Image (cartoon, rainbow, N blue to C red; front, side, top):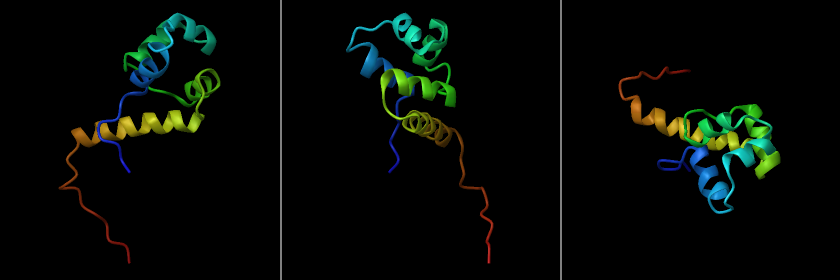
Length: 95
C-alpha cells in the first residue's frame, strides 16, 4: 500500500530521534562518522539517503538499511507522481 505524502527521511529522523531525545545534529553526525553539514542537509530534506548513509543510519539509529532506502524511495516516488502526468504515456502490448 502506498503512503499518501510520505515524509522525507530527514523529517522522520528529526521527529523520531532528534527532537524526542534532545539530540543535536552534531552528536548524531559524530556517531554516523559524517560531517554535521552532511547530516544537516539530510535533515532539511536537501539531500537523499544513499546506500552508504542507509548503512550508517541502520547501525546508529536502528532499522534495517533496506527500510531507510524504502523510505527514501517512497518519498521520491510520491514526489514524482505529483509532477508527472502519465495519462498520455502509452503502454506497450506484449503477446
